[in-house]
Image (cartoon, rainbow, N blue to C red):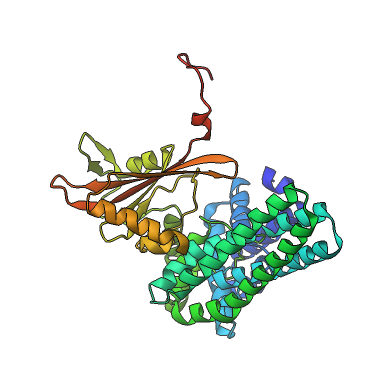
Length: 417
C-alpha cells in the first residue's frame, strides 16, 4: 500500500473498493453492472481524490491498462445521471454545484460570525472572520474564470457590478483586521454584522440572478472550459466532486468512451497545464532576435522567471500570462482573449485605460506602482511594446515580490548555499 493510503485509512478503504471494481471489470463484468458501485464510491469523493486513488493503485503495481477500464464506467455514470433528468449543475463537479456548496458553507460561517458579534469577545469575532475569509477565493474564481465566459455572450453586468461589491467585502475584511488589532470591540461587532450581511446578499444575488442567467447563456462546452480553469484559482472550503466531469461533456453526446475519453481527458489536462495547440511540432524551435529555443523550453523559461509576465495586445485583449507557481496575482485561462478593462475592478479601470492610451500615443514609456500586500512589498510595472517601425503592439505587465530584494544590504561575492 502506498504512503498516501497508509496515512489516510478512509481513503485506503475507498482504494480497496475501487480495486474491487477494477477486478470485476478485468474478470469480464460489463460497465453497466458495476456503475452503481462506482457512483456510490465517487459521490462523496472529489475529482482530485479519485485521481489520487487511481495513482496510488498504479504505484501499488496495478497495470495502467486495468485502471483505464474505469473510463467507460465513469462515462456511463455521467451519462446515466443526465438521462435520469438530473440537471448538470446539480452534479458534484459542475462549477455551479461548487459555487452553491461554497455558498452553503459561507452561510453557516456567517451565522457563526453573527453569534460572535452578539455575545462573543474579540477572539471569537477574529476566529469567525478568519473562518469566513476564504469566501474571497470564491469571488476571485468568479472574476477570473466565470465572468470572462459571460462577457463573451454579451452579459457584462456581473463583472461591472459584482466585482465592485466583491471589493467592498474585501475592504471590510481589512477594516475588521484593523479594529480587532486596536481591540475596538464595538467597531468589530458593527463591521462583523455588516460583513455577514454583505456576504449573504452576494450569495442571494448569485443564486437568484447570476447562476440562472449563466446556465441559460453558457453551453456545455463553456462550462467544461470554466471547470478546467478553476483549479488555477482554487476553492473556498470544498473541492469539486467527480460526478460531473468536463472531459466527458463532449463525449457523452457522441457516445464516446475508451480511447475517445482518453483523448478528451488528455486535452483537458493539457489545458490545465496551459498547453495551447500549435502548428509547431514538439521539437520545433522559436527563432528569437538572438538564438532560438524549443517551444516547451521557452514556456518553461518564462514560467521560471522571478517575475510574473502578462501581455495585452494592441486591441487591449489579454494574449498571454506566465503561469508560474509563484504568481503574485491570481490568473486563470479564462482571461485569454478578455478585454483588459474587464480584468480589473471597476475602480481601477480608468487608471488602466489612461496607461494604455498614453502608451498608444507614445506619451509615456513606463508606468510603475508598488504596494504592501499581506506583509510583502509588491512592484507592478507596465511597459509598451513597439515594432521596429514604432507601431504599438501592446503592453507588457510585470509584477514581482521585491520584499527580500528590498531588504538586501552589503554584498555577497561568494556562493553561500
